[in-house]
Image (cartoon, rainbow, N blue to C red; front, top):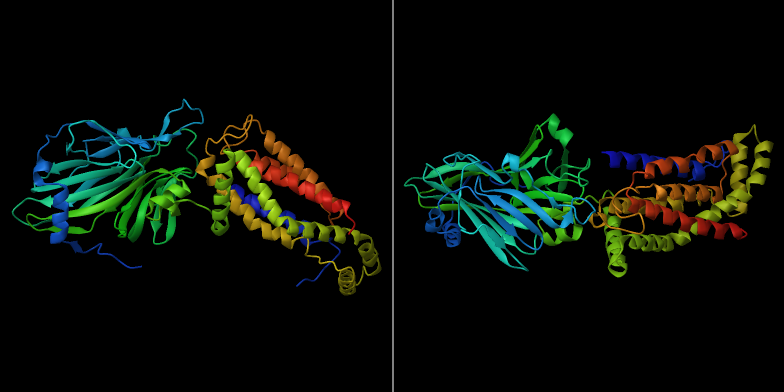
Length: 534
């Protein structure tokens, strides 16, 4: 992906910069330095308790009463507006009321489904005695076509269909006014005089040509599955090459982009068998049940949860089901989490993520001030030894071993550690990458304004002003940094600010603000060290 490739390139250049600047003082010197498997292929038979509990929710008369007709039912909460259809008992549209497709307040709400041309998502099909097409017309238990939930209120919407085999399929959606999670319960009631058996499949459908249009689409769009404890991400190019099948290990699966996710999993945390395939623009994630054996007059329930909403770390954590694993905080997640919470803490006080980023940058700089101060002092001390080291090189230019011994003796006499300028910098690299992940992936920064022309911290500076200023501060910083490189190498490394400036042109402005402020603080610290006598 473009962002990951850019990060890799940035990492290599940073390491190259640090290595040349601090690890190799001069080319003439050679310094020495110290699973459990569920019953996916077995039968499920209903227990008496399960059947009784399920029948309390829906009686046979409630299933058979409404007449089947094609219509839409709208369910609205404080968080979303969902549109369901009796054709296949599917979800057709799902609008997030707190998120806009663009930063403009007049922009349309984000629609996470928007695949009406394909009939919607949560498509149900069956095999054996439960064979059913995904486009049949279901009966619905509500006469009204609009349901409104407020606060912590809960409601449900049930669709039913009677199969020729005498089996009734019941699909029930359950809503909570304060949650993006929607329960999807399947019930299979055998009203025939003999036992019935078969399997059911519930599918999430993603039309990549129609959904998530606008500025919320980027190259991070992919199928995501929690397989065991590992998040498995299958990109569109991966799925174009081959279908993916995960057996007996999936806790949930779905489709996500940089800021939003649609997912489905077993409500009882039972591991599922999931098949993901791509056909044209359509990605299908299919959840297949084990073989169901239902005696006459009995009922079996399959309970799923779904989450259609933002990749908000705290919301996902509160929702449960280990959905928080969908948020990619990178290799240094242990550092990214506290940085995320501190950033949120500052935002709660200043009410602006731009200023919160600046405060976090200052805090990080204060924490690492002693280390960087020691680093700059070490580099300054190394620079003051350059005249004497030049004399040693001239004196022992034909004896490398003696030259190295004399240089190490010189370091000891002046109590200078040749690695003292590098190691403190290396310690800070994990923090930078952790903060990079936070600022690149926080949905809180999406459409978050800062000041003046910076109206969205999650996208690039539209006028490239901050990247250019950042490049200038980086150039000043490099000029102030004590260096033992020869003049030719110094000229080569003056190109680095130019390279970084071009890299940051398309970075989110929130990340550029961090880097810019960090550079300014670093320049102030370097000036302070350079004024002191070492």
